[in-house]
Structures are given as C-alpha cells and as structure tokens.
Amino acid sequence: MSENVLNIYEKKAEEMTSTNIITGKDKFTKTSGGFLSLDCNGKHYRRVRIVRLFPFSDAQRYLSVRDHGDSDKEIGIIEDLNSMSEEIQSLINEQLNLSYFTPVISKIYEIKDEYGYAYFRVMTDKGECRFAINMGSNAVTKLSDTRLIIKDVDENRFEIKDVDKLSKKERRMLDLFL
Image (cartoon, rainbow, N blue to C red; front, side, top):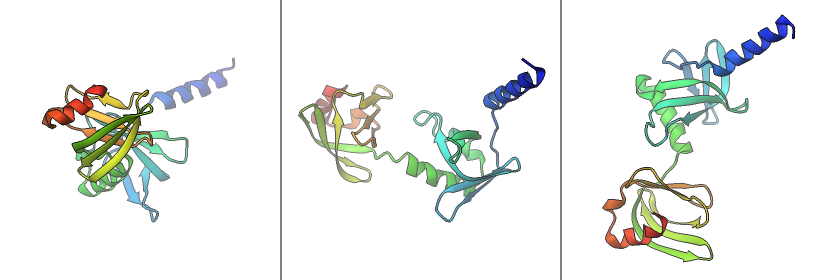
C-alpha cells in the first residue's frame, strides 16, 4: 500500500474517533420549518438532530448533535446543556421534548391481557390514555427497583417514576411485568 493511501486511512480513522465539543460559541438557530440548524467550526449544518446519550440517568448532559442530512453523522457533543445560554437551552429542550415525549403514568385504571397483548388504560401527566403492548416483547424496562419505562406497540414510551407510589391494586396489575 502506498503512503498516500495509508495517510487517507489514518485521516479517516482520526475523523471517526475524534470528538468535537459543542460550546456556547457555536450557533444554533431555529429554521422556518421549526427544526434546528447549526454553525460550528466554520461549517453550516442546515438541519441537526439532538440525541441524549444517557436519556434516563443524565438527560441534560452529553447530548450528541447529529447532521440530519448525512446519515445522522455526529457533529459533536454538548457536555452540559446547562452551560449554554438560556436561549440555546430553550431551543434544544424544545427539540428534545418532541423527540423524547414520554408521558408519566400516575394511575393505572385497568390492564387487560388478551391474545398475547396487554391493553392499558391509565392516567398520565398529559391526560387519560389507552395503549397496548406485546406481551412477548421486552416492552417493560426496569430502570431501577421502582422506575419503569413501558414501550407500546407503536414505539411510544410511558414512564412510571415510582411504582411504590401506586396503590396495591395498581401494583398487582403490574406484577405480570415485573
């Protein structure tokens, strides 16, 4: 292999493994379509997507900023959203709330098990809701001894922050999943 080819591979490997830190100097802007654009290191990204690297344990830190038009290639990392200006925090939180919409279940009215599916009727912080989960899948994830994430058949996420705050009757309904 020629030295030129090796240099190209080394450069690509360096690009793939390097991490760019996004700071307050980089400029996020809301587009006319309601998306985010970014000017960073002299380059304009027409549309970016924000991904939480630790969505449950550290939701405001380590946010991956990705180029929506380039196979979600990572542009860089925001180490701590709270270190950004209030305006930038607001723009990014708006996008995150759309991407990570997760109603919190406060009451379980009913869970029916029929033909391999569980049908839930619950009260959430967004209002009353009905959804179904596939009993044969890993639809219920324990994040801790008391915190659950439930993913329905349409990939919507619901959270129970503390199962101990539910009534005994509600916890008995959930026993099948715990």
